[in-house]
Length: 481
View 1: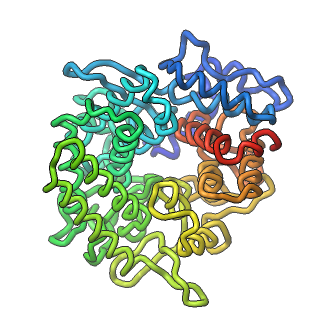
View 2: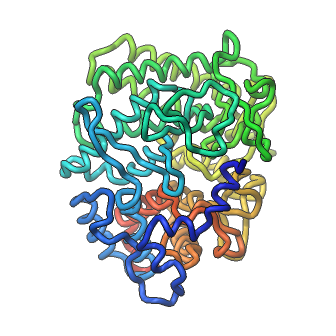
View 3: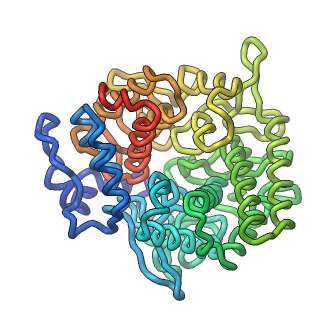
């Protein structure tokens, strides 16, 4: 039975392209070929937003580099073009968003995939309906199981993911995979708060959503593990040790200190130490956003206070237990800790990461501890930082050594104020797509033609977000790069 990694390798670029006729028609094109759009024909696009089309044309017209403009034109609308499924459930709009080449919805990916379109939602009724449907869907998913990371379109269906069908865990109908990751729940709050801030729309935040958010906070408290492991356990017969958990499925031990345990990272790889620092920082930010929404939308000061108290407790624990010291005695952030004094430094390309802390609002870009952490993450002290002839970047255990994730290059640019750094990142991204016109999950540090996942919508959306961000902060780079 193939695991997720083997499944994606078996699919390969050809199978992903077969799902997208427009991509398949050009998949073998030479980089020297004219830059013909790789978008599906209009009649085959899953979702159309007039505001997104206008923004695409506006920003693309400001890009001087034809290759960069072509990539943006393909990537920015890719989530809407290929992954969105809309309908009605119980009289409410419903939106289900697949990751791309995996026919399931990850809470994290679905939130991140549509994040770049939020600034346009106030003036586009179609987008508002999409977001309302996704917020409703997230609430229904959390009600099914707050510990699951991925879900089926049919809430009554058994998982169709071959690698998850024999997992030893409390698998519920509607769950595609059940890896407990703090960030999955945080991403749903981030999207809900971002939508509310962008539009002022109160409609999707009904009693079902409120109940789901109470479930989020309750899950976070249980996974502080002050009174035992709690109900979550997970084991999988897999070739990779990062696909399963030790000690009967409850994970390696952690001493309770106020932080929230996460059994898996946002890469879906198991944590070495379950007190995952970027995920806990994300929880601090998310809990405070949830508190603000609860006060403003529901006048629920009691629940808001509970959110704030938990955020404060987690933040205090991070300050006390999650810092490391460099050769000069200055502090920087660990990646994972266990509460017993053991600490791990590394960084992974998936968000949340140490590199992405300012991107998620966990700190400022110029925060001294972040700057020291960033320097270590983007360098030889991080075992998953790779320096190659094609690019520099961060990967992770998920795809192995030498494999750079374009997402890490995008996050480096999004968290930088230095024009030269951003220009270099744009160059790497524009020259490592292997002529496909899209971003990938990962590519070999010396050979971009060796890549994983031809259809990975989160990476495409994040690239589109980066180009829009550069157009606003450093427009000259798009004209000159």
